[in-house]
Image 1 (tube, helix red, strand yellow):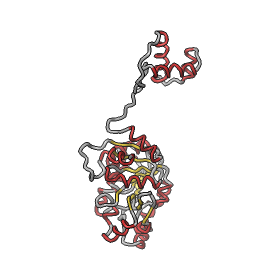
Image 2: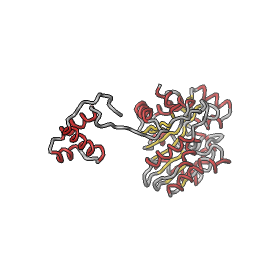
Image 3: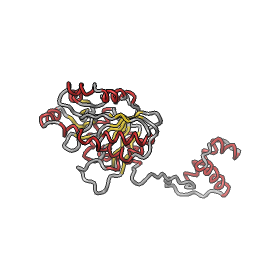
Image 4: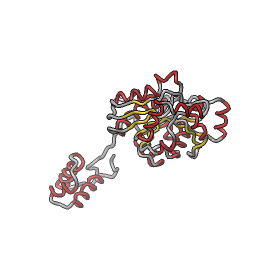
Length: 320
């Protein structure tokens, strides 16, 4: 990106020295001290020459990212919410306002996990369409253990849902898989507690405190956008709506300010507890679309999420 200042004539000796120093610094990766030693000047002289070269358009720095990624919005979102990482994907031009998370979010999230996960980590995957798309798109992961963080939306479709996502991620990583063969929502707390004590589910729960990287989805409190909303009876939905629920993540409910509400619901769910999730060093949320902007805002304000993969439709609303 050019500074936009008009070029000022430099003498040939100045030009050649500036060009040589710029080549050493920007292309060869040498330090200013190394360049100063080579040219027999001070490092402050090198800094002035490089600065002058930029001001006079001798050097032009161009920042390029893949066309589908928006660097400016990504940086703005990261700063706005104090995130460790924020990646904004270009929303499809023909995307509908009420469309589900675009599949390309999962593809970008898969690449991000490939960067964040290191050998020996424990990767946790919560149920969600976006996390399932992400697992399908995974092409590389360092050797790690993969654990399921929530029960499934429908035990009858486990082979196409979070159980399969855990298996897929573990296969790519060449590590152990710890799935949970149980529904996410149970009729009452007693049934949920009995299931948590079952050997295979208890084994998965033991890994929750060892999770180092987690991937979660975010849902708005409306039909087709929140798994938990769709599993509840109408009167239960109305009850939680009356409490001011704005978002759902892994069966945890949040109001618009990011405060957790409806904690009794968690007692009926097979899911990682919010406080355990808060202790995970890296929690990546995957959610997009203008329809989900308020829900994303609520979850980000909760402090449970450290990184976000979203799209321009949601990012524009979040930044407004």
